[in-house]
Length: 280
Image (cartoon, rainbow, N blue to C red; front, side, top):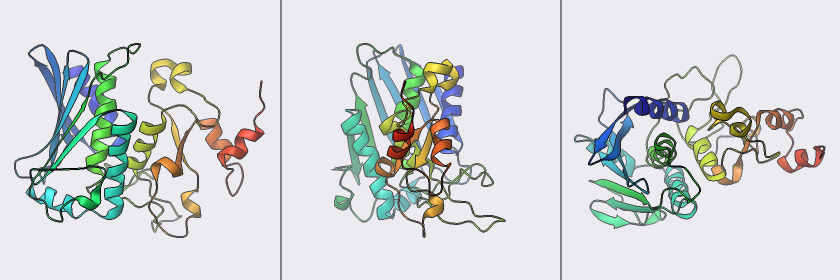
């Protein structure tokens, strides 16, 4: 399981730009993984992932032993953060047909209704389950399925936390949840939240929304899980930072379409580019 754990770790770190620990093994003939963000100064949480009979996935959110400060901070998440949590929960339940059982202070709450949550949290747990985890014509791929389901679960819980990227010098990083805030550098650059990107592709897939190009079909393994994400309203055109709706404001696009969109200023709308395309 060492190789599989390494593949999962690499994929999650590319998605979220933060370090993770990933361990795994076999218990009673079934694979399991323990996955969570690495943080030397504070205990956070782990996701315990189990697959049963290659048909059912079970993911448990488990705060670490001394994670009380983390839970209290999550309770203070902004409305924007809670709405992003809701977007992930809705995607898991409606699109992925998963069951999401959320418990705050040992009481069950509706994950898609943050307004009902209590103001103070002393405990937090959650279980995500889906059976069957694959359709009849899909192959059971342990690594790919773990990455898919864990990235969605991580996105849901990380949305209530403060994310610190591995390398703040790279423009595609984030230190918060609003998008479009200007950095003071030699030129302007704009924050991009990896959670927004991940939710967009989790909801809409890795096929270009404009031309239908699929990197995995053309480039095989190296193209798996690759797509660019386009802000329909460019961050550079935002007068102020604001919340992004990953479902409405973002679309997956191939590199060619993304470049063509930005050939004009202001950038072309997706529908405008589709109308320009030459049909074979």
